[in-house]
Length: 378
Image (cartoon, rainbow, N blue to C red; front, side, top):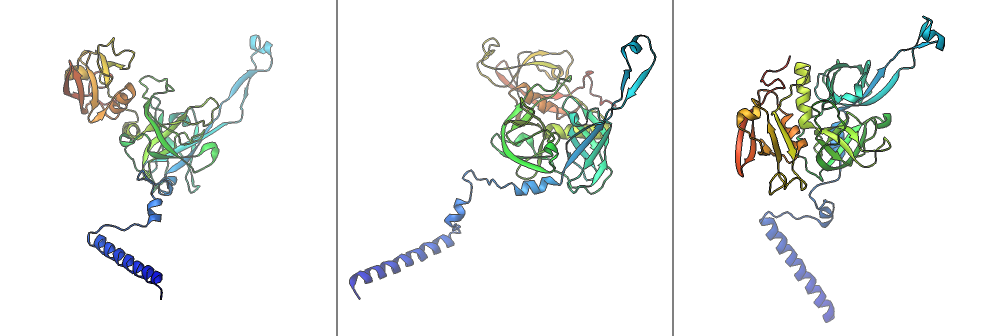
């Protein structure tokens, strides 16, 4: 037996003894031993890109909404009848068929969708993920947020639980679930690209636009469908796309569930939305108006006017104050402020943090309705 072999043999033995010694120390200290292959399978950001759990949780809670609109057209057989005749004919064209998506929010059949999905429709059909079909009753709408609530006669339905859209972070993974181009139960994935986007698509009075912007692919038919986080929770209702062609080109927008929850609850309880108002005019602060507003920092929302006897006035809010927070949520633009106020009803008491003459103040405000009182509308 040569010296080279003995040297290699004893080196291997010593190496093995050292490995056993180190392993025992780590085990005594309860330090987990992880294989390299397992470490490499983990995303360095601490998250996984596997969306199977979220998809499984949400697919059965998203429905296909089909609508029908029938319109009759009156016409004259010739131009002379228009001036001199009395023969008016009616023509019934084929019905206008349209479709979108909806989300089951209760086991007894309440479904939320977009107002524009069911607007003007005379018949509404809801098809579940298991292909069961039901006639749907329209419970109520809110054009100012583009939301509507439907009801089908069915029990023990699978539903999507509400998540927290306030806690969503830019860069967080989300999935969109819906029925684009009548391709039922379609799932796409993307990230939250931005929050509190106002894209000026709602022209109604007191419109609230504070959209979650994502790059999850959304197309016609996805409207009213679910935006879901990685836990399988509903965080938004997919509503619009930014496109010159009518098809997805990179950006989509969803109504945050913080707004959806309150609007849906109002419609189910009252048949209409109970809107709360601060009674102020506001200006967004930016680099262009920073100097004219005599401010030294871009933060919050500037109060340009406080209406007399409004909820803000009664709480002590003043012109030139800067609103920084609603409860514990930071607000830096109009969309964020409207989103937070939309979560409350008249008579609700909330705390708003303002900067007044350079000093921080916390105001307790009792919200009012549009008529300047705290009554709920019947």
